[in-house]
Length: 536
Ligand code: ADP
Image (cartoon, rainbow, N blue to C red; front, top):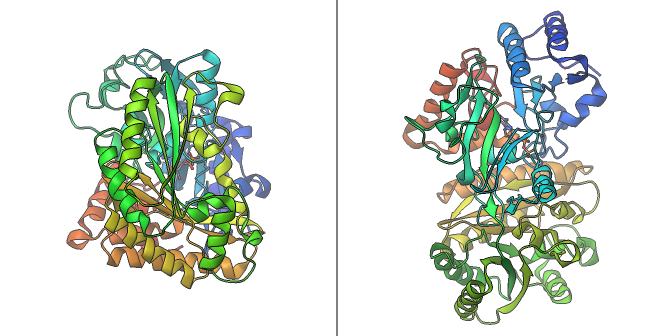
């Protein structure tokens, strides 16, 4: 196998850089072997983009801010591009693989301290290597009456997911909104603490209001480090939900595809007035069924599953065409009032079937919800989302299409119908659902494919591109995308001849003149690499 080198860097120069990094951060934190670098391949690479087209040249695993600064010094001197990940479990969006082939992955998983937890003010300060599982277990072990808000796969990093504006399913499900205060290392090696964090003089201690008030004094910068390549985030404040005395997990099943319109228009007022505070999920029947069975049990032919097979499957599994999952939190009186309102509102949808279960806030062990999706609504990380990989058989992989949808029934129906039709054209089932913010929905569609099947892998990539074109033509845009589509997605945000991307790149060039931090992330290319735009 040919050795992968950073673009434009000779083997001799790269060897010198590796030797310097080894002396700065230790040999065990510098990975170069093919075997070790396998972990930095994108296991779910869709389309023609083979896993090798985004291969890393090395991975560095610093254990402190000072080590990061030492890594940056060499990268600047030798103009070696780095690609920062916290734990690199961003599967379906690229995993730990870099956007620019040959980049050195800066993997922060060994910086994994939970710096602080404050039960009274309900927050934590964490480092990048802390996963949702880690934080959850720490809170339970220490007896804090606080919940985390896990995303669908609980193994991800709290910082990694938040920086990507990931989401979960409790009232704290908008992760970017529940973040407060950051420590960031910039490309020139300077260490910045944002907001109230800038008051601290002692690097070891956390200033008192750092994770409480986002503003501080002067401009706010936290959002600038989300979905960007402007810095390396080494600490972050995250707000935690006080554990409620009780909670109710409810499911409402709906019979008809067209009910989606009424579901969204009924849910929106309940989200806006706070009756339902969590990020409720409107799950498509097929996605719900995938947690209970596999596709081949119902359909073995080519192409998207026919409607008749879907009907048979849903009836046999007692699953709705749409399945609304919501949660209510608080004392029993409050839950009673809100549950009555929810039932009254959704009773107007003919054929709606209601079910609900109550749990004590301090439930443990067998008394906890069993299903992983339900656990997420109760602040418990789970990994059951990966059951989807078995849906189609073979070596399961998926690539996600994530357009933002206004929270109206009309828009949801429109996006659903468009996506389903286009997916069927390329031979894919509509495997998706909508997660409800207050004014918008995250519409998440997954193209599930067998990565050992070259035809399917290619079609999944082609489908993604077609869906992006469709949604742009209809006036919608994505909130996140796989590495392979970042340039195309960024180009769709093209108001005034792309003035937003120009602003992003002006800032990029000012903060990172040598272009060493994550070139190409979110379509933002530093001057040194701008000719790579549009390349895979
Ligand atoms: P997770 O493991 O939680 O899915 P990742 O570690 O894969 O998250 O991070 C997702 C993306 O967020 C990365 O590809 C990278 O672009 C960005 N990112 C993650 N951690 C950092 C960080 N500490 N500083 C800057 N960017 C980051």
